[in-house]
Length: 287
Image (cartoon, rainbow, N blue to C red; front, side, top):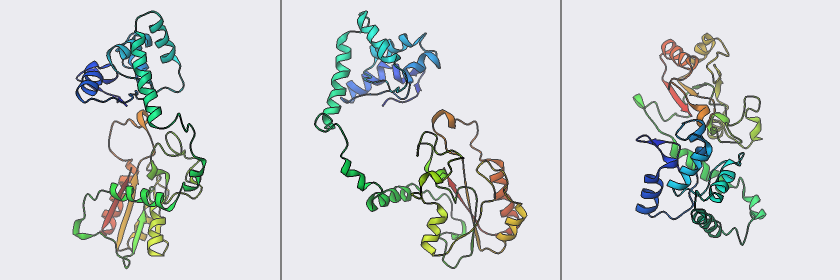
């Protein structure tokens, strides 16, 4: 798949240099090439590198080796391509090249012999080996940025207060492409997982056999849910404080932000606990 992007002022989706010269000729890639979502139309509707969708489609087919436009709710690429070929603006041989690569991919995947998934595989969904593979992926994605005074790992004997909006949530761990586009809504919450998702707190309880001491404190937007004084009082009885921070789920343009700062309320919670208790504070950023 080509990417959303511009290199040295040249959109990748219409770049002969990158999608033909580099990808096909130099690197020898012979597979099927698809655009990112709606990127051909975007040249006309967003970036204005083409005067209309017809010109954007012509530029893509004429200059590059793209085979498929990733758009599931718009027929303009098919309609425009047919018009360009009918008028002789794009040669039929160019379309045949793309058709051949698409058919070869389907053949390589065995879709001509077995066009449908094997229904017997349904019983493997959620299997122990799949769960373990998912857990290993998570383990390998964790990055330890700092461990001052060897505060980690936590010990069974440590009295730990867990605080923050992301420690008791599956959806904030799973991101904007889980369940559906942009992830579960506030109304759906974690109930949408029907018990098939873990949280940090559930993991701690599974290991220790004891329900963790937990106060949410603020919501994901940083809005206080309880007086900070009550959290500080609870924290003074703990040996260590684990605070889970993060953001709402998002994907693609909906996640475009002008600042990397977390919500003020989340940062204020960390500051209040650090200043008022002098206890070791462990921040877990879940994104």
